Length: 206
Image 1: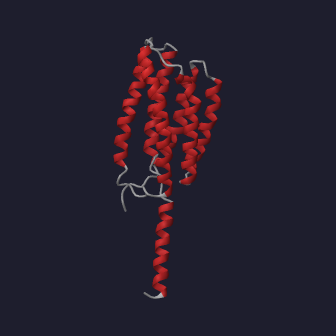
Image 2: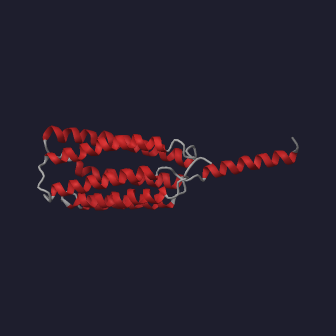
Image 3: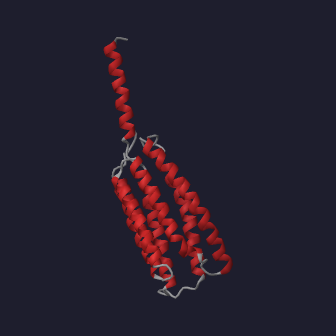
């Protein structure tokens, strides 16, 4: 192997590495799914609290129990859909998977406990309302971290939007409107960025 051939091979490897580093993030479908699910759950919670449908307090447990079941099932299905997507081992995608896994476990532990308590007492556990600043903080950290690591401005901006939602969550705490605010926040900072990211995903293995 001569010097020219070696240089060409090294340049080729470098190009592959740079291409992998710039691979589009694959988490758009997850954000879309969880954003839609969370928005729906928050708005239904608001409707129940405001008495729009005349539902009893046991509806809270049904809403969030359904959220949990649909979330687990949907997550499992979505994981299978990205197995053959190119770029999954890029720095951005590995960081995205790790950050959201940690955040997801934290939220799961918190809300699972609240759901069980709601079923047991027949009323929404107080921790739901006080959880909203925590939820948006996790959204913000996850979105900003993955946005910067994956060089995706949509996620970065959405992350700062999620942090701004903390202010509204604290401001409206104690009112029925806080759940409508939470639904709007999940829609704008999770669902919409997810849809935009899905447009940039590679379609198949090259």
